[in-house]
Image (tube, rainbow, N blue to C red):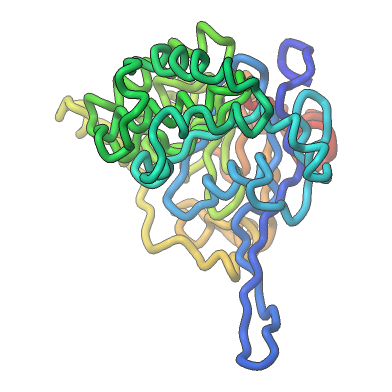
Length: 356
C-alpha cells in the first residue's frame, strides 16, 4: 500500500532483467548473463513523480522498458492499478497500453523521418481504433497543448529543433490519455534553456491531467526539481529510495553521496565546503557482479561484511530506504530502530519501498 493507504498505481516486485551472452560458431549456447536489472522493487503512487538516477549503464532504461514490456522481464512482477501485467497475453495487454506510455531520450531518433507530424502523433489513435473523423481534431488539440501550432501538422521531423521534436514525442505519448508516462532522460539531449522549457511543460501537464511520471535521468540537479521521491540505481540494483529534498540533505548510501558530490554548483564557496566521497575505478562487469554489496569494490567505507553479505533495503525515518551495511548520516539509535522494525528488509516480502 502507498503511504496514504491507497492502492499504488504501479507496483514492481523483485523485477529481474537478464540478457544472455552467447558463444560458439556452430552451436549458439548461453555462457553467461548480463544482470541489467537485478531484483528491483518499488511502488509508485498516482499523481506523483519518481526520479530514477544512476550512472550510464546502471540499468535505468532497461528497467523502464521492462515495466512496459517493450522487453520481456526475466522474472518478477509488475502490477498496474492492481492488475498483474507481467504475464498477460498480447491481446489482453493491448488495452492497458493506453494507460502506460513512454517518452524516449533521443528526440531525433524517436520520430519516423518519413512521416509527417500529423501521422506521427495520430498513430496511437489509429492503432487503438479511434474514428478517423476524430483523429484530426485530437491531433491539433495535442499539438496546441504542448506548445506547437496547427501549421506544424504537415511538416516532417527534420524541420523542427530538438526541443520541438521532444514536444512532438510528448504529444504522441498523451494521445491515448494515459495515467502513467515513463520519461527516459527526456531532456538530456537538449540545451539547458530548452531543458527548462520541457520540464515546465511536463509540470503543467501533470497538474492539468493528473499524470504520474517515472523520470529517468543521470543528472541529479534536474531530478531534484521534478521528483517527489528519488531512487538511486547502481549495477541493476536500488541503493537508496528517499523523499527528494531529504536525499540532498541526508544521503545515507555512500554511492548517493558520491553522485551528489559530482553535481556542479554555481557558488565556489559552497563547492569548497561540500563533502566529497572518493570513488575510484569503473563499475564492475554486469556479467559477473561482485558478491555482497555490488558497490563495495569502489566504496571507501567497505569492510569484510560488505564483500560477503548483500545488504537489504532498510527503512529509516520518513520512508527513507537504503541498502548499506554502514549507513551515513544516521545515528546508532536510528540504525537499531531500523534493524528491529518489521518493515526493515525489503526481501522480507510485503514490506517494500513506497516510491511516490
